[in-house]
Amino acid sequence: MKIIAVANQKGGVGKTTTTVNLAACLAEKEKRVLVVDTDPQGNTTSGLGIDKEQIKESLYDVLINGTQLKHSIIHTKWHRLDICPSHIELSGAEIELVSLENREYMLKNALSQAKGEYDFVIIDCPPSLGLLTINALAAADTVLVPIQCEYYALEGLSQLMATIRTVRRSINPKLDIEGILLTMFDARTNLSIEVVEEVKRVMPQKVCKTIIPRNIRLSEAPSFGEPIVVYDTNSRGAIHYRAFADEILESATDNKEVG
Image 1 (cartoon, rainbow, N blue to C red):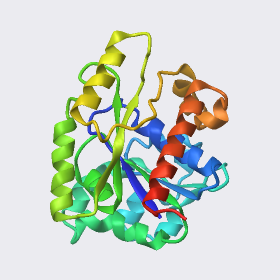
Image 2: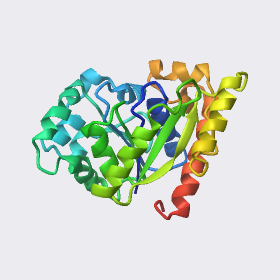
Image 3: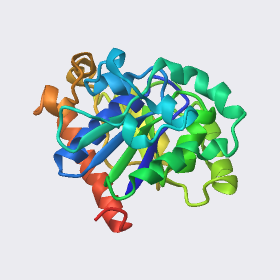
Image 4: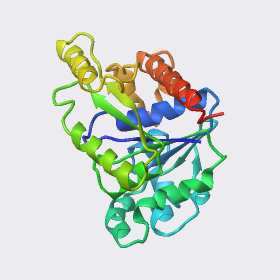
């Protein structure tokens, strides 16, 4: 079971889009996938067609109330794709976690209950470096960092890398960087091309081969509660996320993390 945290404290970079669509593409490739939504806004939860009003137990109950992970998991409409949903209550979890013993490991301990049940766990992190993100990094094998191909793309990246180094040093020594995923790429603009070149210059070994284009169908899909491979299976967004899923599978197979 490989656990990937999708993290960047900068908002609007494509974290949720990447979580939903990577998970759906891996499930389409016959992998068993669990999505964990640690963002109190719950956009990943609704992006996978879950009505937040109908959620009985969420990640909040798992982290704060000691609910078993299996009781919070919802099977989505798509085969092999499950989610541990977010709920607005999660916004208070940052404060409630502070007083708990082993507070950085609550998610890791919960996910240990799913060992053998899934090939991949994809964790969508909130746009901050608080305790929910720290929990995700403590539980993860790797961190995937989406970066938009726009001005200030690298803003905050050094802070995130410093956090990853701290987590590696004190909480999770095995944590590795899965890659930097460039999103919202527009080949018609010099800016997008310049951002790609700059990111490759700063972190040449870590940039993912796949680049996700700016695509209107990708933007529309969440409002229908569907991944792009369902909403518009032949769109450019679907083609590129399938290619990215292949890249992730190749990496996992090389590291023997998925059977």
